[in-house]
Image (cartoon, rainbow, N blue to C red; front, top):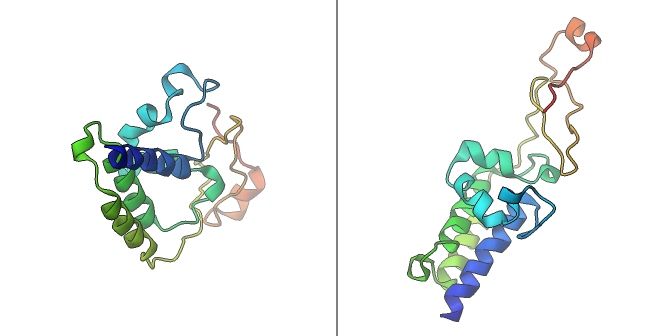
Length: 145
C-alpha cells in the first residue's frame, strides 16, 4: 500500500517539475489551488501540455521527454492505486526519458505568441527573424490578457 502512495507522490513531484508550480497554493485562483486537479487534464494532450510547461525552461527540452514525463505523471496519479505503476516500472520509465537523445530545440517564439510569466507579466520580447525589416521597425504589440 505504501509503495503505491509513494508512486502517487512521485507523480505530484513530476507535475511540479513540469510546471514549476507548487502542488498546493492558495494564492492561485480557487480552481487552481490543487495543482494535480487543475493540471491532470493537460497531461494527456500534447498541445495543452505546452501551455503548462515551466516558462523558465524557455522551451529548451526535448519534446519527446516532455511527453514521456507527462504520461508517467498521469499514470502515477491514477485515482485507483491498483492502476498506478510499481516503483520498478517508474524507474524504467524514467530511464527511458533519460535515454531520449533528441537535442533541445531553441524556443519557438513568434511575434503573435506570448507567454505569461508566473507574476502575470508578458514575457515575450523576442521577434521572429522571419518578419520584414519594416515589420521590425514598427515594434511589437502583444495582445493583452
